[in-house]
Amino acid sequence: MNDQLTPDERAAMRSRILGGARDIKPVGAHRGAVIAGAIAAVLVVAIAGGVATTSTLSAPQIANTPSPSPTATVAPVVPTPTLTPTPTPTPTFTPTLAPAPSTPVVAFNGDCGQMLTDTDLSELLVGGPGRLYTEPGLGTNVEDSLALLGGLSCIWIGNQDSISVVVAAPSAVATDLQASMASVTCSVDRGCATGRVVGDLWVGVLVSATAGNYEAGFTQDEVSAASARLDRVISRVAAKPHASPVASFGSVHADGWVLSDCVALKGRMEGITGLSLEMQIAPGAYPTPTRPVESLLMSSAGVSTCLFREPADGSREMIEVTLMPGASAPPASALAVTGTSETSVPGADRAWVHADPSRGYLTDLVAVVGDNRLLVRRFTGSPSGTDADKIAAAVLESVR
Image (tube, rainbow, N blue to C red):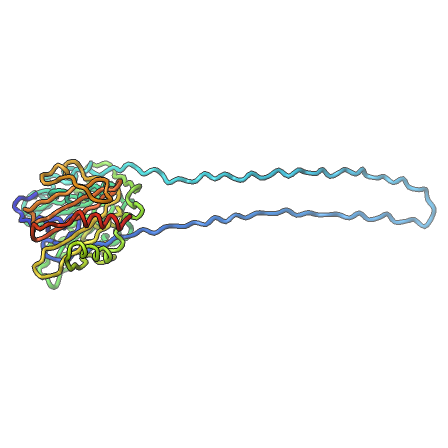
């Protein structure tokens, strides 16, 4: 991590990984959950019947002159055998079970250094190789959710710009996300992004880019220059040796483990905190091409988020709630960070809290239920307490 960044800048850089409330330039963030539908099938059975036929014999004609009595040949009567019907056995159907979830195989062994080397970054980043950004504390640990998709996300910060890359198994990337990122999209607040399938990888890339006129946006020449740079990054990533990523969808859509109503949750948050909040994520905001990581997480990994902020001028109050089905507990390395301790939350199997006053009184609370993870991120402007445990308990109660 860049130790020269201020607390606000660190929090801002986090939005490069999973949305958040602040970008490098202060703008609103948007995330929404995409809920999958169900498919129904109907089976129709037809039964066929049989047909019976009969025949009739004519009597012989009587002669007018006497004649010897003919000897009638009588055909023997052959009795029709009585057939005993054999009952048709009731067919026994063996239910077709869904295949066991595959063990995910993460691209590049989950190592950003295998994705792009310092030599690559020296050529791709303006002003030098840059630094790999890592989220301090509990963070959101998005890698645990991306791993279910065979995915990996890495961000490098240079002296003048940044590169963010996310890869995943192509089968794990929703069709609408692939379509929305097929062409280059530029945003004055986020940069330029694109994504496509190359061999056995889907590669999504976001690079920082500046429009000559902020109000007018990017010119065609500026978009073309960004497009050439994006192509170079994708080519470098795809050319690196890597195992073919394998996605596991077995646990990313746990029943009920989704934030389906941020409006209702907002009322509960206001009751707990005493704040007047506004919702920062509009429903249906994703996929967003210039936010490839969060778009992938929400469309394919079952991740759902509600983000709230107090709109009062000068207020720094923010609450972010994220559900990550299948992500399980954070890695031991995250739990070992100074300032992290185990706590208890009603409804959770286990829970941990990380508080760091040097980061502007930011508190992360992670609660685990089965294989599912809840993150509550609470940012305040004072050390007066955050009630993160009460927020977590209210969220867990709402998803039961």
